[in-house]
Image (cartoon, rainbow, N blue to C red; front, side):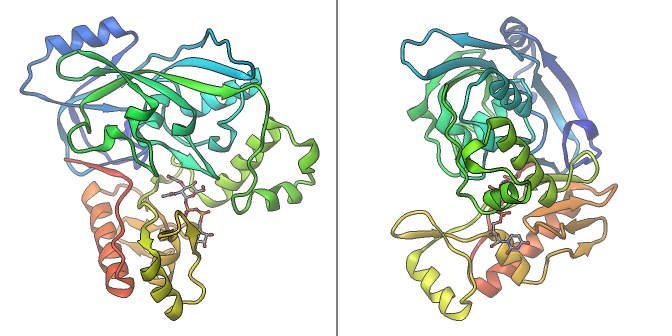
Length: 334
Ligand code: EPU
C-alpha cells in the first residue's frame, strides 16, 4: 500500500481492486465473502495505516466528466466520476470556463473523496458546489443518491463521516453545480499578498491566474507528499465557545480567531501547536512540519504507530496547556 497512501506507510493489504465501471464494482462486491472487511480509498491522502490491512482495498477508475442539461442561465451542471483526480477536475473546469472550485486547486485526492471529506481551502469548500452524490453500498451493491441536504456538509464533515455511514459507500459520481461567470474569492489571508507579489491586479485577474496563485501559496507552506510523506492537515481547527475564547484571549492576546458564529470561534490548530513548542520538532522518523505545524511528516520509513504517538503527544500537550482537545482530520485504519 506504500504508493496508495500519501504518508508513504509501508503496509500490505489482503487484496487490492480497481474498477472501471459500475458493473465491475457491483460484480466484485457480490462475489466477495461478507466476512472480509472492505475499505474504499481515493488517493490515500487522508489516511493513516496503523497495521497491515487484512481486507480488500477498493479504488475507483471512473474518471468521466459529462455536462448535464441545465435550463438555468449562468449555471453548469456536471456529472463527474468519483475516481477522477481532484486537481485534474479543477484544471479542466477552468479550461472550460466553469467556475467556483478554483480556490480548491492542488488539494490531493479524488473527486469521490472530496465529496466525502468536504475538502476545503482558502475560503471555499467542495460541498458548496455539490448537488448530489451517487453511491453504491460496499456490502450490498445497493445504489443510493444523496442530495446536497442529505450530505449534511459542514467543516470537514459530511453524512459519510458519521459512525453509521463511515466506510459503507463507494462514490460513483458526483453532480456539481458551477457558474459560467468568474467571481474570485480573495479574502482568505495570503491570497491578496501573493497576487500583489506577482504584480497581478484584481481587476484583470483570470481564473487561471487565481489557480496559479493558490498553487504558489500551497507549495510555499505545505510539503509535497511525493517528496515527504504527509496527509495535509493532521488535525481539524478546533471550534470553541466564545466564552472560552475570551478567557484564552485574556491570557494570550495574540491568539488568532476566525469567527464561525456569534457563539463559536475557530482557532487555528497550527497556532496552538506552535505555541506548545512543537513546530519543526522531530520524534524518531516522524516530525511536525517546520512551515505548517498542522502537518505531520514521515521523515522516511516511519510506521503508522509512530505518527499516531506523535499526534497523541501533541494532543495531550495542547490539552494540558489550553484545555482544547484537537481532533484528527486524518482517518486511522487498523
Ligand atoms: N499559524 C501559526 N503558525 C504557523 C502556521 C499558521 O500560528 O506556523 C496560524 C496563523 O495564525 C495563520 C493560521 O494558523 O493565520 C491559519 O493558517 P493557514 O492559513 O495555513 O491555514 P490552517 O487553518 O492551518 C486550513 C486547512 C488547510 C487549508 C488552509 C487554507 C484545516 C484543518 N486545514 O489550514 O487544509 O489548506 O486552511 O485554507 O482546516 C488540509 O485539510 O489538508 C489542508 C491543508
